[in-house]
Image 1 (cartoon, rainbow, N blue to C red):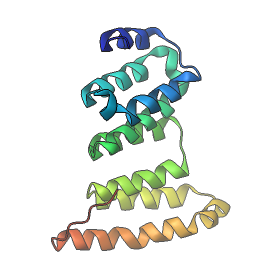
Image 2 (cartoon, rainbow, N blue to C red):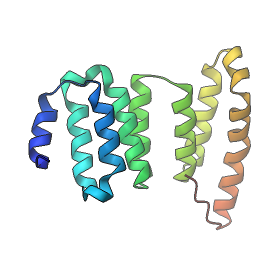
Image 3 (cartoon, rainbow, N blue to C red):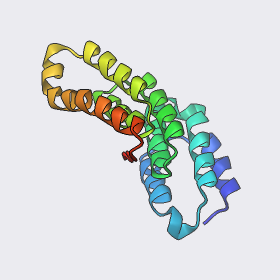
Length: 157
């Protein structure tokens, strides 16, 4: 396997192709076996995200970057990357994941704000389709906040 610097140099100029998702999955899923440090994976993602040849895929790359940081329990960075992905490509599923991540990071007010904003943006049909998830979070956020304020550990993933 080439050294990290060679891979990064390649990622700076390469174009996103069908192999990229598989490569990212391989790197992140097998990082313990391959002894790849988190900082190296972070550098790889940042290189791919900042490569102008990957503009069309930035939302996906930010999403994968968020998922990597979630696996590392770096919620703030994951949330930040998720918001970047959302700003590039709006998605109800990503919004719901972001709400979950905000709850996990004890950002209850922001989770509720995103939930309310999401509900307002949905047309009636989508609101009905996602009624169960929206209602779940509407109930869950205040409960989790109250438990947190009472001193209970509320480890959400």
